[in-house]
Length: 75
Length: 132
Image (tube, rainbow over all chains, first blue to last red; front, top):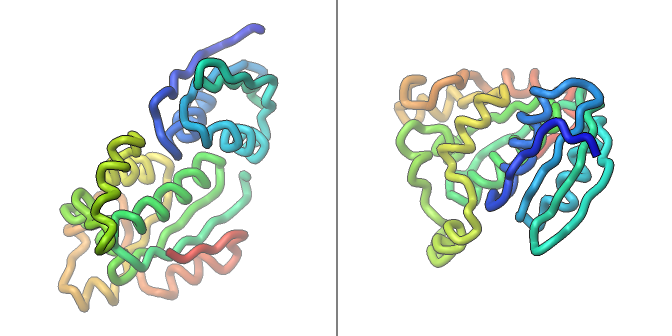
């Protein structure tokens, strides 16, 4: 996947992963892909919900060794 | 969530209340909603220059202090400055300020002072209204 930017949000608790993702996304252009790494367990549903409510597209998400990874395409 | 408006009343002043208010408010603002918070009575502690840095845990819940550190939860100071960055409208209740002899300068930067009508005017077309 062609990733434009990687955001390390590991170790951050709610609502920081969402806020950091929003800030990172603001700096990207339409069609760019942001890869987010998080360890907050709530991020799994939160980032999916955030992506939906902000109109972006969640391309893929994985979970490995307690690290959640998300690939979000900017609308 | 653009074109979504969220109106929040913060009427209590413990650390728990602060997290309830600022977490929901910043999540909404980060989702592109327009957010306004009306701070009234004990809720004013949440934006008081000094008080917001050291909010009390509710009585009998002091043991949760450790949990906040363990969970790496952001400090209220961080959340307040984030609220400002996210352009969350913060209104301090004029009447409560008068009762408590507080001035605008006693509060963090970026707030405005208004009465109940100011909040009602903001909230009249809100999609989500919350009270904490």
